Length: 333
Ligand SMILES: [Zn+2]
Image 1 (cartoon, rainbow, N blue to C red):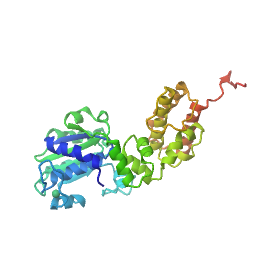
Image 2 (cartoon, rainbow, N blue to C red):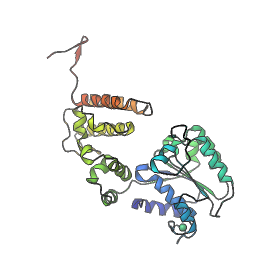
Image 3 (cartoon, rainbow, N blue to C red):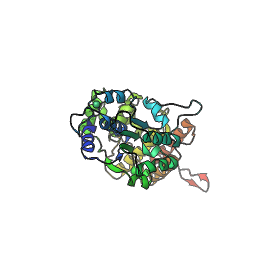
Image 4 (cartoon, helix red, strand yellow):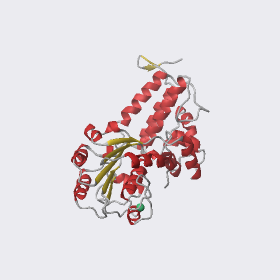
């Protein structure tokens, strides 16, 4: 999939980056994984037109790379992501696909890096996202970042460098993927038939791949646009069936925009038309706090429907407070 907003940053990194360890800061929704792949392919390409040019896409190395069979390239992603993105990995059928990059996967990659290269252009290990490594995996990687085998490169991506061990950060050269320019992202989504692309793009925080994925999964601009009204009315219906992390993300965005509206401004994630009135800052702050504490346990095996119902009931109370209780009894008007 061609992502036009990656072209310029890719060219810059190819022209300027000379180290053996690179940390790319950018989100999956902006194409961080695609960036890692394009960069790795270019480093391994045997027929680039210019030293800072992109991969040719035709040579033997490029063909092996594109068919997931390059002997000098290894990609490490969490198994759950590999399954979702159709990346070929060996899975252990006896357990659930892991959400972490496990230490044995890192150790295997380290052993592989010390063997001789297959095609003579060096080796590339790509890890996405680096925050999916637990402390043990990250420690195992450190040694290679300190003393890499000759000709070996490691490229990692992260949505937030603050989530990584400082020792990992300090051993990598860092580059930031700029957010895709809005016009380019919109044109790209429209080319793919996404309707009301602007609404979904705003909802996804300007990240076109995330907006496209929402469309693929059946989340329409219409549903997104109506979400503030639905939550204010206590209707959890539109959110049922969404994965919990996305529900939490959507409600946090709603919280953010509600705060903007109370302050007399505009929101960032939802269209301003049909915005529900009557929220209070104090009740909003309580809801926000409660969402944050649930976020901290997002991996907890919640009963999804019940959790969503209760989150929306809390959301509703931001706009429609429960009658105050006095002396343990409901106050009557
Ligand atoms: Zn090539």
